[in-house]
Image 1: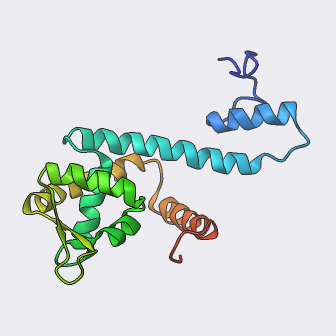
Image 2: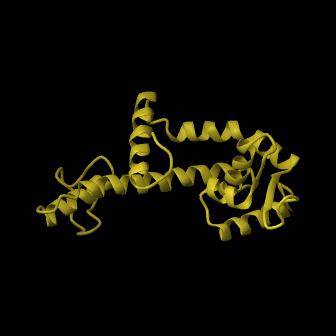
Length: 181
């Protein structure tokens, strides 16, 4: 195997446990004066995110659904007994902009998974409600989705997962995410 930046064969000093170790080894060789340990953490989080997203996308594709569609449906499902939220609350809960959510809701309305209506008490407020079909989709896919995520994380023990979850929560909070650990 070759070092992708220099096309030199990987040695014990440049070969690591994962691709990020290889990158860090390359930086250590060309710039030993720079501590790149933060790059290791950020790089691994980024790579893990992409690989997890790929596994989640593949699961939902097998059910003719996009991950974002399930996310919006699940957000409505778990939000309250009416399975209804106003657009601004749904955008906040789904962590997307209002413009992106409008497009997503349009697509979900067209599929018959959500219903959109003007609030009877405030005509400036738009309410999004999960339809019976939308509830059925969430019910049918939730256990499989959780099992898929469990499979994707199978390389970690329960203790590893708890520790990683706590550390990621601490990181997210330090970056300005809402809530506390």
